[in-house]
Image (cartoon, rainbow, N blue to C red; front, side, top):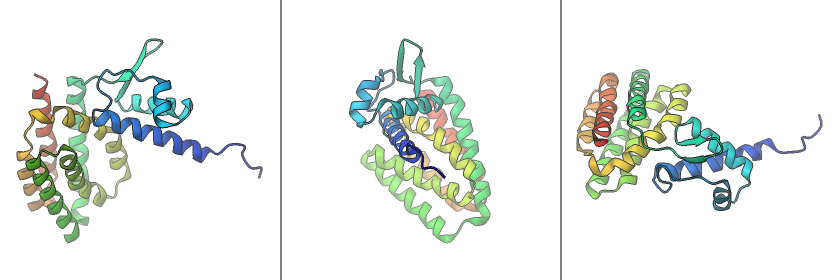
Amino acid sequence: MPVPANDPFERDLLRDRAYAAIRDAIVDGTLAPGERLRDQELCAWLGLSRTPVREALARLESDGLVETAPQRYTRVALLDRREAGDAFPVVAALHALAAELAAPRLTNADLKGMREANARFAEALKRGDVDAALQADDDFHAVFVQASANVEIARALDRLMPRIRRLERLRFGSLSGRASVRQHEQIIAAAHNAKDLVKENWLSLGALIDRSFE
């Protein structure tokens, strides 16, 4: 077999690196809604050539984090109330399905991990530490996703959750997370039959986000 002239694995890694870096900057607000994304600036920032950067932007557009108008602009997607309203029911349903599939597989270690994550979540809220709060919330719900052993759920959430987390970060000051701590406690108490509680947890957050647009 002849050796290929280029290394597709290296190209994939560069594209993934560009995608992750730009995605994270959009989610945490470093790249603000509506901000123009120029190839030259992104390439200089990332130390990459144009090809992986353009591939990353195309993927981010598919994820709803970037929007383009041919010959006019490529920019960070604006915060859109309707898109948020569309995304939250899907995320809620996926997490509820993960909880349902995980139920027969949950272990004591899983429940302990959820309690620890919720304790970190509550403490982060007290400190006003948005990064730590969202990471702890991710860790809490990740227990169900991992225990569900369903790769399609994980794949779909990987695409949707950055949009959800961006909304939370940019609107966090107007939201109260205290109810989520109590909801998490109820979910743990009913862990083996918690799909409805999990769904309500995400839908209640979606309702808060929706009201914040007002």
